[in-house]
Amino acid sequence: MHIAVITETGALETRVAATPETVKKLIALGGSITIEAGAGLASGIPDGDFEAAGAMIAKNAKDALKGAEVVLKVRRPSSDEIKLVPKGALVLAIMDPYDNVEALSAMAEAGLVSFAMELMPRITRAQVMDVLSSQANLAGYRAVIDASGEYGRGMPMMMTAAGTVPAAKVFIMGAGVAGLQAIATARRLGAIVTATDVRPAAKEQVASLGAKFVAVEDDEFKQAETAAGYAKPMSAEYQAKQAALVASHIAKQDIVITTALIPGRPAPKLVSEEMVKSMRPGSVIVDLAVERGGNVALSRAGETVLTENGVKILGPLNLPGRIPASASALYAKNLFSFLETMIDKNTKALNVNWDDELVKATNLTRDGAITHPGFQPKA
Image 1 (cartoon, helix red, strand yellow):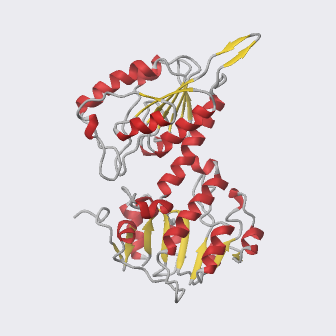
Image 2 (cartoon, one colour):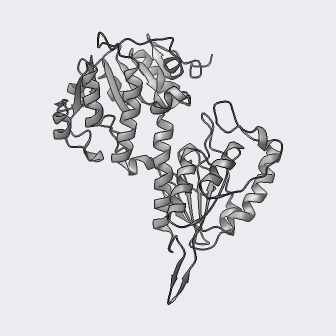
Image 3 (cartoon, rainbow, N blue to C red):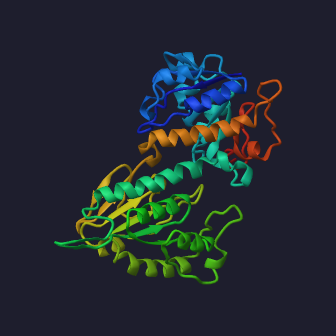
């Protein structure tokens, strides 16, 4: 069983799909690992560390992929990379399959057996494989660090002989994995933290971290969570009531971090232009949903916008990639844990159970076709 890991070529992508730790574990399962030279440098992993763990180093992606039965990546293979991957190889990556039928079709036509790690079911058995959680956790942390760096004042209350510095007021919109980590990080830095979410279960989680919950808690709110734990789209009437509450709250905040995403849908608009205008000069907004259209009016992907009233709006791309060493370590463990379920422990060979619920949920392409019912081309 030959496994290949290549350098990520996407813009701003600093992560790598393997670490020396996971290389050792894969070799113990019977794999041989080839890694493209320099693949781990942006994550602080030199080629020598991979070699010491037992991997072979190839001078380029073409050589690394030669004869590969499994390809581990961070991002979906590019059109050029698809041409280099052997037909029938398993490709595990964050595939971003929504609205990307052409890219999925290209993998299918190339005969690749692809798996989207972000489609992993949120069940107990798959927790160690949950890339959305592992990477969103780091994104929430980094969002607060970036916001505090842009905010021109201290985060905790500081009492000095020269006067008192008040604690920053931080408002987290969306209390999923990223939001909860943002709450915890802001609290550690000494800020006064409030948070909102449309899922009723979030109220207790927010309170457990020492933050105050802000939401319109009507009957619709009480039923606003799917069986999978995601937020449901809310009615226009509820959105209007929630927006009115949030508008009055945002005007008093120093930092606002938005994290609201619904899989397969554009990011919901949570912060209007009027809300931005109501904030004080020097305030900071971080839009973690900017890659999906954004939660915030005026935010722009990959840019920092300074509004006329002096509010900074950050639209960061790939926040986990801003902490590449930690992000790679967690992501590589996610990949290993999933791939391990596809390896026969006795024969030490690939043995995919196509009836496994994890395989069914994540498999995108196989036998020259798009197999996932959610992403097949429409007639």
